Amino acid sequence: MKRSIQQQLLTINQNFYDQFAPSFSATRDHAQPGATSLVSRIDTDASVLDVGCGNGTFARELVRTGFAGKYLGVDMSDNLLAEAVKLTGEPALGHFEFSRVNLAEPNWEKMLTESPYNWLMCFSVVHHLPGEDLRLQTAKAFRRLVSSGGVVAVSVWQWQNSARLRKRVLPWSTVGLAVQELDEGDTLLDWRAGDTPGLRYVHTFNETGLTHLAEAAGFTVQESFYSDGKSGDLALYQVWGQ
Image (tube, rainbow, N blue to C red):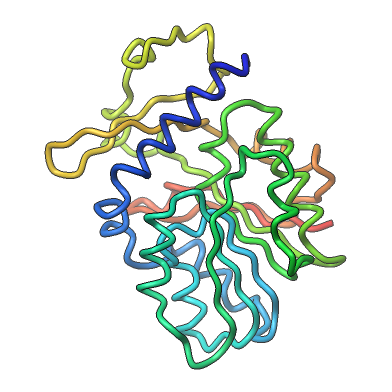
């Protein structure tokens, strides 16, 4: 993928979260079932990095279960981070922080001084990264950020399993691009808060593709499962180990 196309896709998503953070946050008031199913596996004194933490839904799930370790949530959206700080408050147990990080910036992981982490969570984020090179660069950064024996939990959207979301697919001409300029599986989706439309770029993963990314970065896929949505298959989750 050309760097100019990659940058255009990144800008589409940045603009979306800059514009729609409040209304988007209002639709994300709790962690998804697939994410909550992993909480019981995390030791209460563990160190957790939440990449793409959004408005802090996973942080609040940890608080609810009595987590007493160290948590850092990072996201590219200042507005969503502000929501995360406000909604999480000051838990009685544990140490919770939030910080701005853009995965498209080189060496972003060097900004995180508390690494390595026992757990790295990355829910509904990797599919927003355009280009195989950027996705692999990000996955390799994950490997550097987790401790020996540490665990990475990733989820990617399976929007194609929803009849409602399939109706939201837009032609690439909407943003002045031709399908030949994109990678296979790249999709432009419409999102609405009321009658106000927004655009999001999504790369559509299947299980084979996500496994390939994990293995190319040096991970072993320990588990794959589907969860979320009314049909229970709106997201693909994988647990990666070293």
